[in-house]
Length: 79
Image 1: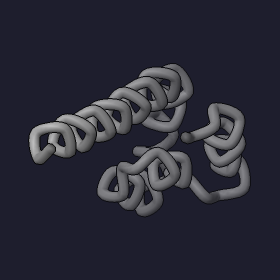
Image 2: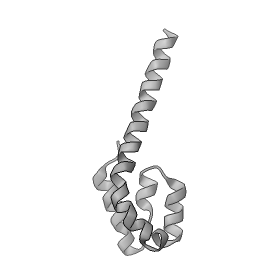
Image 3: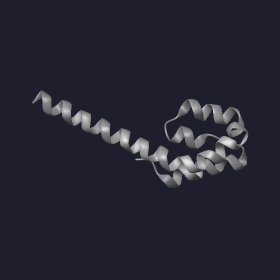
Image 4: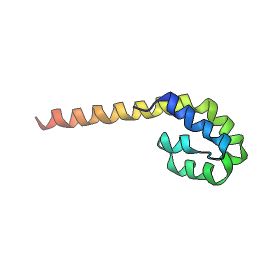
């Protein structure tokens, strides 16, 4: 499970020049690389992400729950 505190702490690393690390942490490597190379889309994307992080955390948790449910369903069908 991803931590909101860790996501925000990695977001704060933009102040020392490492933008996009929170996107890597939240499972979005391609946009993380884009943020890293463009200084968080010139800072605008980094500010927008401050408000998008809770949704990214929820989406990741939902995807993990769905994966678990699908695995349980497959196991039950085999029985």
